[in-house]
Each structure stands twice: as C-alpha cells, then as structure tokens.
Image (cartoon, rainbow, N blue to C red; front, side):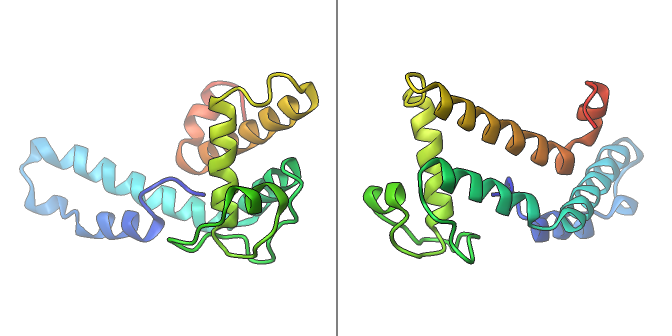
Length: 147
C-alpha cells in the first residue's frame, strides 16, 4: 500500500549517491535527495504496517469482506470481482484488489447515491492520505496545521 519506490530501493538510492564525486553545483541536490530517501525509509520503518492493516480492514468492511489474516499483497495474485465483493478467496492480493475496486468505484461515482458508504469511503481516503503524508512529507502536514 505504500507508494513506490519501496523502502529498500530508497535506501539503495541513498547509498549509491556519492556526493563527494560530484561537482559542488550538483552536490547539494543529490545530498538532499539521499537525506530525503533515508528519512522516508526511517519513518516507514518506525510506522510499521499498523496503519496499512487499519486501512485494509476498513476497505474490507466497506465491501462486506472479512480481512485476510495476512492482508499484505503478494505480487501477481488476483481474485475475481465476485470474490472482491463478497470476501471469498483468501489470496494475499485480495487487499490490493479491494483497494483497486475502491479506486474504481470512486472514479465511477458508486458511492454518490449512498451517503453512509460515501462517508465511509471518504474517511478511508482521508486516513490513507494522512498516513502516507506522515511518512513521506510530514513537513507539508505541519505547515498546513495537521500533526
């Protein structure tokens, strides 16, 4: 559920950037990039997977599906639309499929006629955005009055 690139790629990037080999004009930008990558990776490690599991459970509840005991997606696993809507099938990719279904339903206006489901979908999106910003750009949250 985290945005790309994955944490290991951020840390790899930070390790590969050698600001000492660069001319002074390029050092500042690359040093900032490396420091940002390391800071994001550290915040991701500190946050763990708790917020992801909360979002996955909320999306599963929205669709009336029981959360999978191991909801983090495995690449390439897919389930049918019927399985997504009913919670059938226990593949690890189900949570990713439910998030894709949520995105599709939001784009198609599926919640506009049901105020309670629209409120639930908005709450999920709000929590998702805040959680991701806490890891990737907490300065933006602080600058806008969110902590």
